Length: 365
Image (cartoon, rainbow, N blue to C red):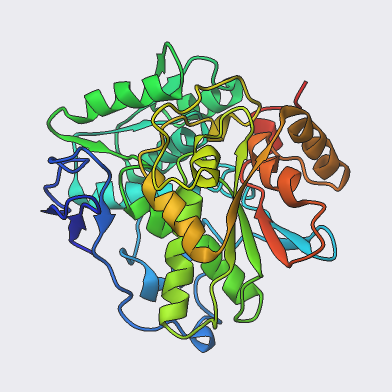
């Protein structure tokens, strides 16, 4: 188990077992001091457990008791150049299971009195499920207007549900206030880096399924950027281990209605602009984040990969959901954003993640 957090902004370090949920100096998110214990070998993978835990050499936790068999989702072609990884075929019907299992397993080992999380829905349902698996009491904060199907799922896992008046940012602030209480583990998919080391398995699975290579580009929906930063971690590790010759470009996708990172990227900024646009209503609720705490890291990761930011309007999101459903794939509206952005590309080999099941939100009106 990796034992030390560090702050990428000011260098503060803290022991994982006793650290506060954020850097005590700048209140920013932690990174994790972690290097894979040994190189991953494709020859060692056959016969291993058929879940994300098969990549044990590159994970900061091992021998989990909290697993629900997450990972190893199918990769299917959509066009001659674009393929989709069906991450909605996870135990809680969302890619967030990749990171939530890491947080719940870490919490189980640390033994807090309670776990708290905040979410627009999918991370909350995932944390609630894995806390149930781990036998941990859990409270999930969600914004008003969260899909009833998602709140029903959270309650089904016997987590306490707290609905917060206001938007996603107000919800995060309420959860962080609760996280400061003694005996509390904040299962934050944004602030806790163990989550990123879970989402990076998305890329390790692609590498294995594609026979030891990665596509030209990875299109990733970006709100708080947890899947994109996990992908950046994985591609860096694979390159360092000599398992790929180059890193794929990261294509970050945001809803046109809420696109602070895209605005900063195209303005050439290293961080969010001083006056980012506010949140407008969007069908892509899962990425409607106006001030992502890891903004600097997200912008840097996209630039270092040679990638870019794309935005999609609401009518294109509606159309993309219908297009995928017509191909047999019923995906929630946030999860179709990448297909909406790159589905007509013919100039590169691209993989898009289908991150959440359509049953979670229904069909866009």
